[in-house]
Image 1 (cartoon, rainbow, N blue to C red):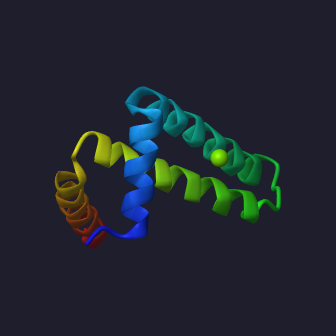
Image 2: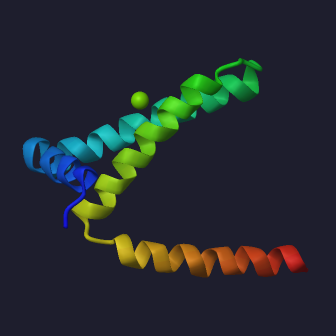
Length: 91
Ligand SMILES: [Mg+2]
């Protein structure tokens, strides 16, 4: 059964389409980048903004994976890459 989140993601993609949603993803990346830079460079207390922009990016990343139908291979690659990181950490 479809979760309410699945319905929202499907409706967002159906309503706004692939290219606009991918452009929003890029916009959200840059908003998160800006907040992280403010935090590091200006020692700004902006955890609320970082949380907000991280949520935006994750929502749009979910849509990216749905648009390209790549959720499973991405999960596989995450496991493979994390295993490599784990090996590097053991050295
Ligand atoms: Mg945002």
